[in-house]
Each structure stands twice: as structure tokens, then as C-alpha cells.
Image (cartoon, rainbow, N blue to C red; front, side, top):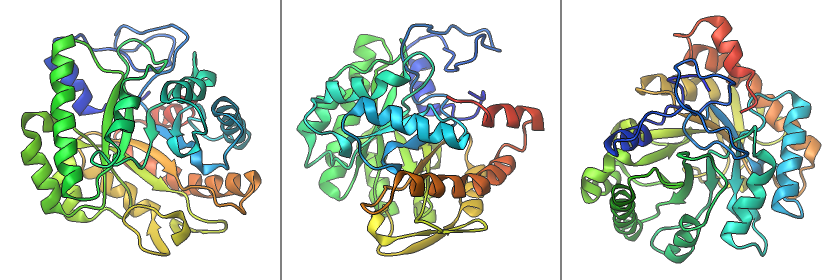
Length: 332
């Protein structure tokens, strides 16, 4: 972890308001700030996750644990930074219960990896039972660590449902006086006025909301949600889809905010993050397509890492060069 990068201000605010001591979210042997650390054979969560990879970047495997091993191997072969920081992909669940899926998927990362997010396309209005089943399941994270559950807001029903959910989760956290294992990560192709409505309906609980953005998020939404943005998605495009910093995103990938083929600039998107108070977690995503082999998907990821590294040097420019290099070289 790089302190002050991926701090996740909403969750640290919740911890402070619960009266809990600050906690180290790093995998380093000793915390430079002298904070307490959990050294059990568990994974770390979202706070402190500077980078991460959605497991859907690679074609599905026969089991959650085998897929995690495969993604670690393929990223490791590339020498990819933060190769043991994985966003579990709910769409690859087969017959496992929610608890089985997250436990098996996270298992290979226990001890020296992290699961910052479980990404789903679940809608809080339409899929309330499924969301509740995930939120009530155990995930092998270190004590006091929190994993984000990405849910998608599509309409006014989604807004009403998630406002109620967030208020309930905040109430539960204050009742238990403990940091939750799970916390919702909100994303959706909503207008700025719709996000403003959500903020109003959520009330004081909004200060703990986590919001995800991608390169296709509208500027007025970015501005309105700026204090709550904790995850920025860098989209990995199609094969041979990178030219300098520009990434071609095929419409078949169905990325939120796009309608058909799209192009964006990694440099411009990362530069936009400099306007935020805290650098968010950066997740590389872009689902593999049926005809893309593991080798093709490795090439897709590798092609984006070069412009991302240059962009992060600018994003982290307040840090000395050796510190930037140290952070980039971490595995989780």
C-alpha cells in the first residue's frame, strides 16, 4: 500500500465515527506509521488497494479457486504490478453459494493477496435477495477489513432501494460497533440529477457511500460524486486496441456508459483523478470475449499497463520517484 493512495476516505470516516482505531491495510512486514496489522492467513480488502484486476479479463475456469490461480499465474508471467489484487467476478459463479464462491475465489490470495471488490451487475431493486445473500456471507478477510460489492443502479427504483440499503448498513455498523466485511460500491449510467436524488434520499449515510467511475462517466456526475469516488475503472480494450494512450473498446464488452464501440485516453482519464481529494483504487477491467485466448488477454492487459504506468507517474507526482517505483512493484 502507498499511504494516502487508495485510502478509501468514506470507510476511514466510518471507522473514525465508530470510535475504532486506525488500522494498517498494507502487506508490508512493518507499518511505517506504526499502526496495528492483522497477520492471519486472510486476504486484505479495499482500503489500501492501489491497483487491482477484474478476473473477467480472462476466460472463465472450472472453479473459483482454479480461476484465481490462473489469473495470478497469467499476471505474474507478465510481471504485472499488484498481480495478487483481484476483483472477483460474480458472473463466473457456477453452482456455488455466495459464501462458497467468495471463500474459494479468495482462498489462493490468503496470506499475501487481497480482494478489494466483488463485481456484479446486480440491481438493488431487482436483485435484493441476491445482494442480501452476498452481504450476509463470510469472506476470509483480515479482521477490520472491508470488501466492496459492486452493484448497478439503473433507474429510480434502484435509487430508492440502495438508499434504504445504505442507511440500514450504516445503522447496523453503529449497532455492532465494528467495521463490516462488506460494503456496497455504487455505479450506474445515471444523470447527475438522479445521483443528487440518491444523495438526498440517503441523508447522513451518503458520507459513507462508495462510488465507482470509468472513462465514460459524465463530467457533471464526476463532479457531484467527487467526494465519494473510491474506485476508478481503467478499461482494457480489444486485441491490438491500444495506440499510444488511446484504447479502443469493442461494443461487445458492454462497458457502462458506452453504446457500441468506444475510444478513450488512459492519460486523460487518470489525469482527471488528480482533481479528487484521495487517489482512488484503480481497477483494470474489460471482459474477455469467447474467441480470445489467455495469451490474447495477456497481451490486452500488457498493452494498457505501459500508458497506465506513465499516467500514474503523473498521478503520484507528489511522491518521490523511488516511492512511486516501490508502490508500482508491489504484488498486493
